[in-house]
Image 1 (spheres, rainbow, N blue to C red):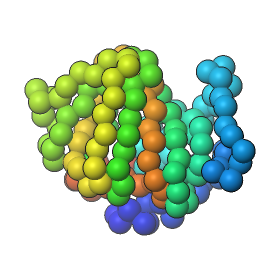
Image 2: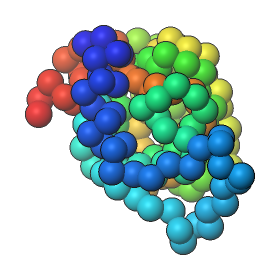
Image 3: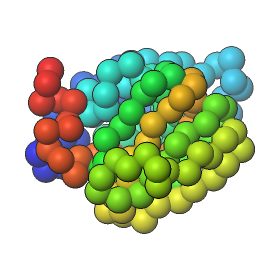
Length: 156
């Protein structure tokens, strides 16, 4: 499925229920207790939650969101259309590069870690404990799975 199709179908449905702060606003401040979690959009495997902190992932422009992944969560090899800048807020993400999910090549990145990926870099992730990562990138956000059969929308 093309990224544009994923964004057109999956993102507005999910992100339509969230209010966004934008660059046009004077400022944005969110205390940890004020983060509003909702189920992740269907372009991600079931079980995760997302909180949009700034911007609108379904539109062009800068945005920041947090992804809360439960223990045992896996995201198959995929790419994104824009740079992704990620900080591990809590827990540990196991991040691997490439078009196959070879766990022996993944690196464990604990709380406080940072990584940045250029557009279209294939990568995968798995989580052995509940983990929260903060993703900052430019929209519209999209995920293209290396193997289209890994797209969770195909099984729903």
